Length: 266
Image (cartoon, rainbow, N blue to C red; front, side, top):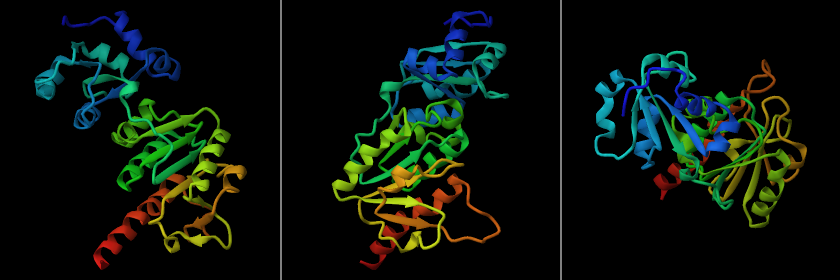
């Protein structure tokens, strides 16, 4: 393909539109930025719809695409700066068809429910931790779009690997959680309140739905009311609560830790 050097080229507008939810919906595409995200995409066996890169990037990393039929569009540095969302792009962006991503079916044995999480950095960090902890599905009630560029960067590719279900309103999570509880899954709410059980005392080997709430308001009362167990992370009274992404790490990984201990003792 011929090198694109003009920011007025129609491709620039198409890619910039993917910075916003409307553009992603209308085009059915996701924008990935940087060599690491492209490598994760390929590692997962996903096929980019288009790769856009500078000549310098192609010279250094073109071998990543050597045995693939992915269209590769060379662009100048100014065009790359226009289509990327980062201040210092490393020379490549790619598009992916949204339908190629895994979709949650609503029946995972270990489900993470995120109620109206707003901060893209928190969401990306949570998704990365969830993947490391062996979460099968993530259900999102409104909040930040998990396929926006900031979340994709913060998740280091986890948002591409995890089956996600994003609902337009937080209360749309209620029937899903109710159905899981009726099927015998334990429904766990993370809370900051006296009398809540320290998270490590729970038996995490059971099929589990773990619910975490909004950064400011916490878990919606209707969702919290569905909990069969309420757990907390004991900490110093010097702070009122922990950042949701920080709090998620020990709780999510406790299931993994208990599984390792059980295997070692078998």
